Length: 171
Image (cartoon, rainbow, N blue to C red):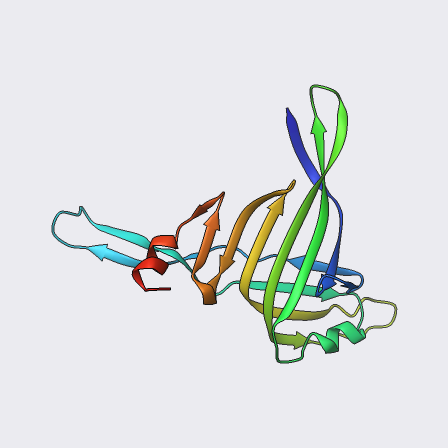
């Protein structure tokens, strides 16, 4: 049995090639858009999710200091962010640690750039925040999520939840 323990390390790239430097990443969360349903036949209210539709998704990159990447990522265009990590999984049957690949790809548009602070001998904590319009999560070689807001794509564990919607809309 594999017991996932921690993220060993990761790297973040722009357009899949250029490593962006020493950074911490805050990954997006999937929060479905919802609407309250109430009325005859329902005992109360149900906060019902809209299939395949999500609230604003953001990703944050915090750098230790101001770098050229901080300023370049402020350009008002979609950036292709590629985050690759290795998760430490303990195989309890063999007693061996197994590094397991994790990859998160985002197409992201800048929302905020913070230059951070200036204090002698301290990290500046320069930060970029992005609106995510495309998100793909691959774990151990298996595609787990693919969300594309502009192209009506919501695939979770191999099920395309917007396929019928695209067909209904003639897309």
